[in-house]
Length: 114
Length: 113
Image (tube, rainbow over all chains, first blue to last red; front, side):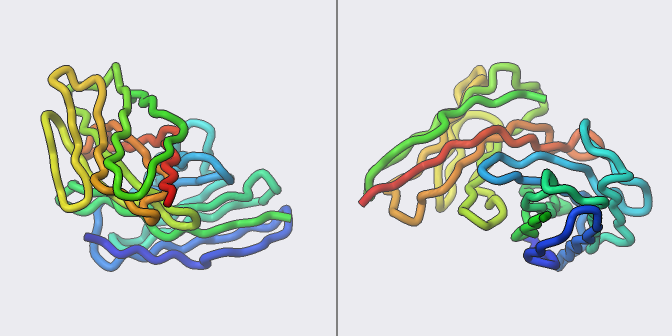
């Protein structure tokens, strides 16, 4: 199994600013992902965070808006840049354990942009 | 990526068995079927995963017919605490760049007293 923590758990930010969300896992994992869940909606995959290389972004998401770092096998950050109210969402970190039998999700970061 | 279709909502009562069916007509050979549960203000939680036939764990059972174009999550004797959104996902979990789980809209299960 994997225990995931995220910081901050929630934040209220002004438009035009940036917020960096941290994801920490209690064990080494090969695959880490970042998802977004807008109010009342399902989860949308933003990108796959690759250790030691650039993240792989899904259609509709770009590195300039959502830069991702993954310096090691237990940690990743997602930055939401130049925020607008449309970025108000829950952002979730997710990992797959080395045996690949389950995908685990963090508690999420609730972001409100005013 | 295989698309999934599930009912938007279902209602049940405490103690009943609940079956939620998911359609995935274009499932690929390497795809597995996974179900997640999500409570408000929490991340999704893994329930069960299978490839074919029947899988059972301490929480639920997953029934997959031979053609694998659908699957049914069975929750025995639900309680009020089972009220949540249930997601059916289909994807290749074999690893590498193929690994990707795409969430559909989910089914809101409401368990009534």
